[in-house]
Every structure is written in C-alpha cells, then in structure tokens.
Length: 307
Image 1 (tube, one colour):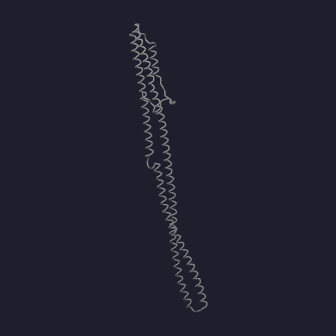
Image 2 (cartoon, helix red, strand yellow):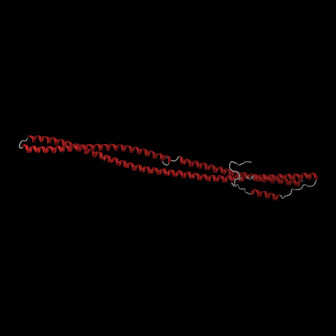
Image 3 (cartoon, one colour):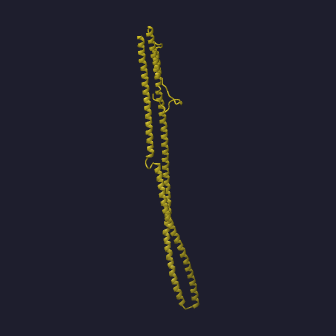
C-alpha cells in the first residue's frame, strides 16, 4: 500500500511538473510571437503613415498638384500677355494701313497736280508763241505757276509727315513681333521645365506608392509567418491535455489497485509501465516542435480559439 502511494505521489508530481513546464513554455513562446506580430504591425502602420505624409505634405515646389497649378497659372498669364500684344499689334497695323491709304491718296493728288502743271505749261507756251511781245498772259501764267508751286510744296510736306509717321509705326510693329516671339520662347522654356517637374513628381509619387506596397507586402508576410508560429506554439495545449488524460488514467488505475488490495488483503500492485520510460517519452513530446502551415485546415486570422 505504501509503495503504491509513494508511486502515485511521485507520478502526480511528475505529471504536474511536465504539464506546468510545457504550459509555461508554450505561453511564453506564444506571447513572444504575438508581441513580435504586434511590433511588426505597428512598424508597418508607422512606415505607411510616414510615407503617405511625405507624399501628401511635400514642399510646394515638389508637389505634383502644385506643379500642375503653377503650369495652369503660367498658361493663363501667357494668354493674357499674348492677348495684350495682339491688340497692340492689331492697332499698330490698322494705323499703318490708314497711313498707307492716306499716302496713296496724296500720291494720286500729286499726280493730278503734276498733270495740271503740264497742261498749264503747255498752254503758257502756246500763248507766249501766239501773243508775241505781249507779256500780260505770261504774268498770269507765272502767278498760276507760283500758286501751283505752293500747293506742290504743301503736298510734299504732307508726304514727308506721313513718311515720318510710318517710320515710327513700322518699327513699333516690328518690336511687337519680336516681343511676341520672345514671350513664346519664354513660355516654351517655362512649360518644358514645368512638365519636367510634373513628370518627376509623378515618378516620385509612383515610386513612393510602389515602395509602400512592397513594404506592406513584406510586413504582411512577416506578420503571417509570425502568426503561424504563434499558432504552432499554441498547439502545446493538445499535448498537455493528453498528459492530463494519461495522468487521470494512471490515478484511476492506482485507485482501483488500492481498492482491490483493501478488498482482498493482498499487497497493492504497481500499474504496468516504467515510470522513467514514460517520463522520457513525455519530455520527448515536449521537445517536439509543431509547425503550422497554411494548408487550409489550420486556424487562420480571426479564427484563433483561446482555451
């Protein structure tokens, strides 16, 4: 009887020690794995947030949307300058056309004066040859020729003034054309640089998004790997349950032997099986590592059962 009780006591201590050791080890490993999962998740969230902040809160000169707005303002300003220059050029062209028309009219008038002068000269020669020494008609002709000369001089002054005006208007038109050309070249340069900024900003945005996605994939892979490791460590509950069930059977067997010994008066018999062998066997099971793989039958995220 005493031998059975000693064996039972030793067996109880052994089973409790094995179960406690296995449970503590599993809980520590599971806690470490869960802590690592949380650390990976926090790091992933922080990196993602930092990257998004960098993309959305970048400097105005490097922002894609700000670059687009700058280009829109540049185009608007250029259009306004172009409209003003076009109006000035049109006004200058209209003035030049009007001056040219006036010059044509003056030229036609001068042609008429020249024609009249020729007619008067012819008539004067005819009268001079016909009258002979009489000089009165010649005096009249001289007066008409003097009047005509004054008129021609006046016409010449008008033509000179018109020429001077054209000398002012035509360079103005030329300057406006050159100014429009310079503005067009400046606009082309600014637009090219702006498009380069937009392209660089878009490329930086694309690379930033790719980096975020790649980092997210790596983080999620690490999180899943650690989650599977945590679930594997949680499988310690099944060996513990088996140990406790085996222990229950052994206690039951010892109890039955004690009852039989009391009933028959014979010495209590130790249950079959070697204690040392069982202890080595149990510790061997405790040292085995159970690996959880994603085969469709394992526990997945959201399905973890806490025992």
